[in-house]
Image (cartoon, rainbow, N blue to C red):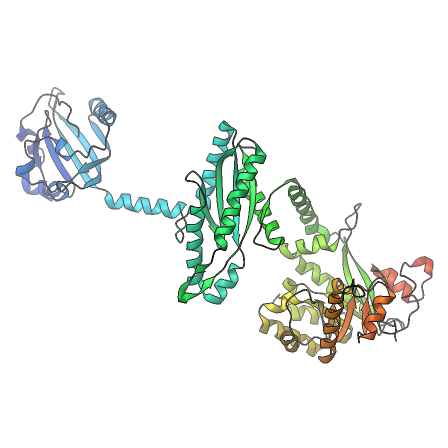
Length: 592
């Protein structure tokens, strides 16, 4: 209550009497203070003494101003008295001071007492300490809007501040920037050194981010090892704003690259991939802005990590095309839009030994979509699993058909299997079911796996490969030399074939380094009793070099381009040249 003037006084016993006996008055849990109309304190209870620290003899006859904290403005008290005059009651939160000087929040209710004529004769105030409640509210507020590990704003608060920054930017015409920061290879550190060490690194990163930005900017943790920085009020001109944003991003990149001392004296070096998107006003929604910065960040990762990339229109075009592709891809299988092509594989004498089955997507009325465009999309979306199963079934159906044709019955078919498809729990059963459904010899089916598949859950991979080898299925290691497979890895997996990636073959006759790599791979493959296949062979000089150094099998344009499966079969089963498009070296070639 304030020190304002009260209406006329009333007898103390008239107010006290309304509370009954003193014992009951003191048993009430809330603090109670009774004043006369002139605001002189007439009576208090035990709860009041416990809460404020004042004894009765120290407070009786004084005014409530003794409890004032000084935090409330004159306007606050003016509104309080207006409410009391209008309704005879006021209720709300107020800050008061204990005898010891401590300021605390309380919930206060004031009721005016009136006589029979309606005149105010005094006031009764009841109040309680709400410090714990306020603390709990603060904790809830912090948990709702701040990351508990790093104490940075979380994604929700970042959204809110981005919306406010967009509105402010609209008024001021300034550009802002959003930076998405992903810590490179953080999962490896977490898996090898433990989550406690990972948490320590995240806390250190949060501290360094805050050191790189202004007070008006925001550093937030998106989740996991991904952070965000929002830069406000950069410049009205987009190019100037971009330069400023890049300078901050570069400062962050360099700051995060400094070594971090982790537990047990471990010195860790980390790098970050940073994506940047500019904004001004409300030209973009917050969701769009985040998406664009995220795309730019992934472009930074694709550039080799530890890099900075800005979102631009070319990325948007790519994004739109990707969305369109994914929408079409989801229905392509049901609509029968996938076709398979075949490319021959030959031995050193150019005798045909088999073919690789290659997937193509032909949307109606549109150009054929490159596998480089839709296969990664199918992988990420999970569509590669049903698509891969269809390819597997098509291969088995093809082998069944070939088994009845004398010129084709001994050829094998190679099928690419994605990591996601291979890791399906029932993959072995899927292959077994397809083989049995079409009644073919399993040895004629060859599954091509990439090196990346071998690096995770090794025991599971070995178990599945051995289970399929027991059925008779053979395995080829695709694109060898571009990944991380080593001699130790190759010894553990039951491969029958090793394919040298075409990138090493292209310059084999002109680049000594590529030639040395190819010779080493051939020697290693032969020492492990693996059939080595050279991919991308296009001219006789490459072929001669490979044969000279012990390569036994080949695949490439020199021996035939990938063509639709019916054309491939027609060329090898006596079709006329007018009916087929397979290059001459393959037509009529017998198995050597």
